[in-house]
Image (cartoon, rainbow, N blue to C red; front, top):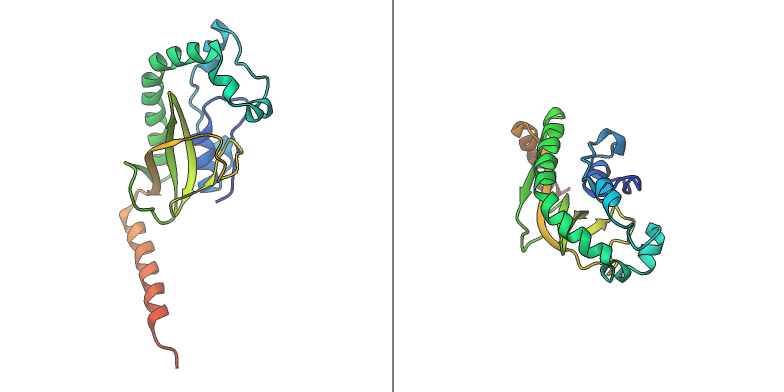
Length: 186
């Protein structure tokens, strides 16, 4: 996993940065699905902070603003359409590369390996890279164990080869490696 941060020119770019991180590809090779936030900004006041650094110093300022109320109302209407486009675009992108992204409900046991956690915080959605049940990368640049945001995990996204024979080969190699560890050495 090679950490990639969100592109500051785009709002809602966290899933894209997580996929680029996990697959270790340039973020420019991954699709960006415009959320329409740029249009929203044209019709209302600007957010109550001038930069990501200012936001990180005082994130609560966002929730105390009129902008937040306007944004929540706009996003409630806009999100369903955006989610449809998001899912179709990413499904096609993974398929072109011989991959599939399985979406699972959150589990009470950690999944082994890397995956993307879909999170929510109020009306906001976010994506984090996890490994073995722990956050290892926040594409917004927060430390993995930072308590800044109480994200609630609502989905897990596991990227895998579309061809099941590749998965079978990977599992067989892991089993072989495990069984070789158990063979007594003379």
